View (tube, one colour):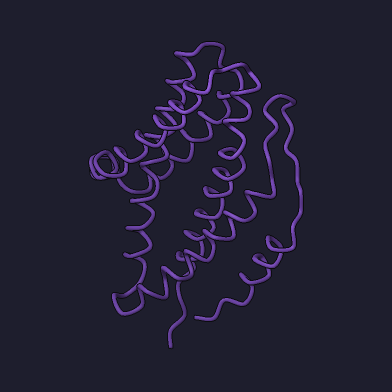
Length: 179
C-alpha cells in the first residue's frame, strides 16, 4: 500500500494550526467583551455576525476568490488575514470597529476551509481520499484540543497554557498514524 504524500501531512499541520488559533480565542471572546462592558445583546450579535460572514464566505466567496487568485494564494490570504484580524482585535476602540473586525475575520477565515478541503481531496487518488481525510481530521482534532489548552488573555496580552492529558495524548496519537 502506498503511503500518503508529505502534502497531506503539511495540510494537516495547516489545519492543526488554524484550529488551534480558533480554539485559543473563540472560547474567551465573549468573556473579554463582557469584561470590556459590552452588553449581552452586542456580544451575541458580534458572535453571530462572525459566524454569518464565515458561512457566506465558505459557500460563495471561497470559490470566487480561489478561482481568481489560486488556491495557495487564497490559503495564504486567509491565514494572514485571520492573523491580522486576531492581532487587531484587542486594540479595537469602537463598536463599529469591533463589528468590522469580526465580519472581516469571519469572511477571511471562511475562505480557508473549502480550499484546504479541496486540496486534501486533490492530493490523493480517489480510492485513498478517505485515508487522506482521516489523517487531515486527526491533525484538525489535535489542533482543537491543543487550542483549548492554550488560552489568550486579551486584557493582559498573555498566552497561558493549562496542560491536560488529553491534549498530550492526542499529540502522541499523531506519531502513531498508520496509513
